[in-house]
Length: 297
Image (cartoon, rainbow, N blue to C red; front, side):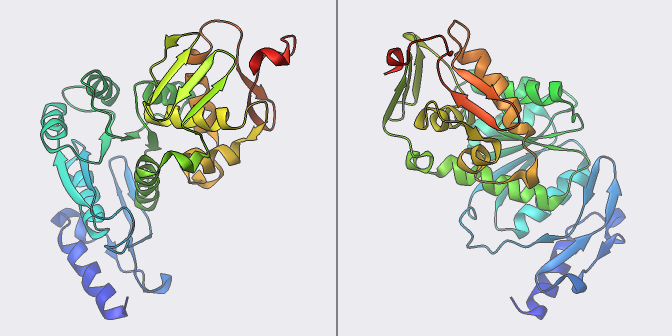
């Protein structure tokens, strides 16, 4: 992209911002062609340098529903996503968001946890109860483990902690869409995987433990498929991030820990436990050591 084109796109993005934010706009010429910088500190959001995505990137053309009651943050997210080539629908309340999610069927939802008429966790559980499995990226001020577990357990696919950087939001959106659209072969999984009394069927997207159906979110399904594809082998957390999320999360492996805890609650409700921690390394799908290995075949 030429410098002139980059500057024009930067001015167009600046002009979409509310008047109260435009004076914060600073073109970051020193950062290289195609980069712009917004230095904004308002409410819970902070925006840093990010690379404009070309409209023909693999995830361009998708529609994103932005649900945020703060008008400034909502406009900022809408402008950045539009500049990156996404179609954008916006909503300020849970009621508006529900109507858009059901009628417009976006490819992904960026959802603020705190809304005036509901919270993002309850909203997501409601969507899943209706059979809507649109990926959800939470925007949350809660960075604690309990908050992450609640969000991911409600059916969310990922989270970004406030104050956030636009670059991180864009990268995580691309990663979610990439893995949501990826074929089952990305995990190296066969159409049906079995270990002990646990079965995962890629064709029907069904999981059973001891004949009992287990309801998993799309990301939990991919995590279990990754473990089942390599039974009795220890998978490092970084390896799981690459296989399941296809993104390194800047070295933050806590999301793996959170999803593993959630997966255990669903898979290991009855003994024997199959998901095991190898401290300092990662996780392994295996029977307890006192079980006969032949029983797993």
